[in-house]
Amino acid sequence: MNGMTEKPDKKRDAPVSYRPPVDLAGEFRRRVEQSGLSANAYITRAIFNAPIPRSARKPPVEKQMLAHLLGRSAAIRDALDNATRVAGDDPRTAEAAKAAYAELKIIAVALMKMMERTP
Image 1 (cartoon, rainbow, N blue to C red):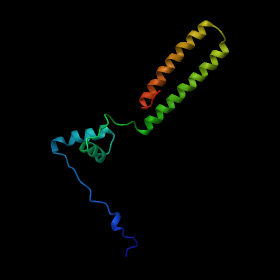
Image 2: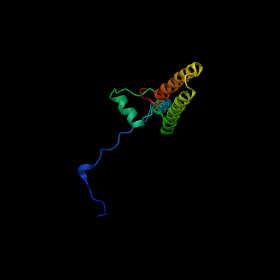
Image 3: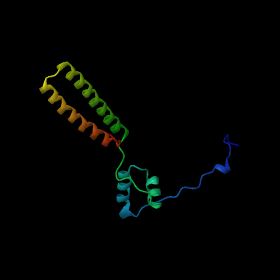
Image 4: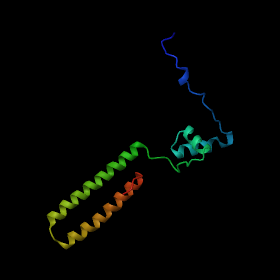
């Protein structure tokens, strides 16, 4: 024996291969890439009529950057909270802070949407 144990009951079936027609190969590759799935997952979903994602998922690095930006916007909000406490009851400061909070909320909602999370 060559050192490997044989497991005939665990043997996988031979893979099924797919080669798109030459005139459709580019379109096939584009759709697979756009879906963010492997070619195998894309074909499986297509054959079994499962929904195929409209576009690729965000790469991990991009999601990390979005999460970082979301964290930084929270830090800005905290700094703004502190600044308004120090400023006291000045109505101009309160109005400026209110506008800044509204802008930060817009940024946070957009970042959450880009991260495919609910705000």
